[in-house]
Image (tube, rainbow, N blue to C red; front, side):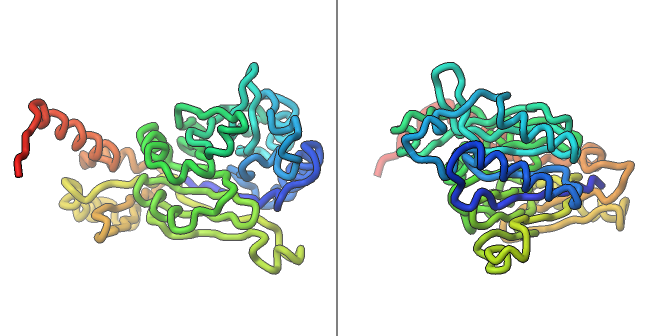
Length: 315
């Protein structure tokens, strides 16, 4: 079992007047998360720029690493957490909408460029990214996606194929029911940070946490705009095909050491290891389970092999 503490911040609630104020408030919020002892903290899309005038140079972005990641990184190192920051990146003469992964030591571990910016973003000069990779952390592999990406399954497919178990989603829109669909269909914990409401959804599509300025008590300053949940990251998604007949043997072998969540309408299941010395990958190898995306891609490959000759259909 691998307990991981996830915290998503609804910030910056419409933004402030300039980059300096946004960064100052991000630092303050990050410091306020310390009592939660989080493993990951996620800020929203373009948290660095939000609220700045649209014709401001702020939207051209800044280098990564740079002043914003250094300011956030110092607090990340003090708390000992990973942080995901939404911001515009300036690379040479190009601008990307980025999500930056900062490690527990305060250094940049990686970044993601929004694969599918909106039409308006691209018209203003923000370029699209091309890859959605995952990054190895001491809590498992994590990935990022941003806002409009949620509408495009090819982004989720790249993340699933790269082995991401947790996906951080800084966004300007909430996404609603698509959170559950993404988490369930692609086998990830989805951590949403949006300026009005943030949430955390597990691999079964269940919402574990929700909070933000849509809640009156947050609006009144009585509660922080933090969605917080503890998860078991030693968890993986599978299809029932070719696996379901093995589940009884897995239960007989490990009993209370595993938890099996069957989603019969979707024909999938999620397997958790609750043991410290045996991981879900160990169980997968022992019982020759085929994980969700290995099975899907094997099916795609076989389909391609069956289509070596064009099939003419007449009506």
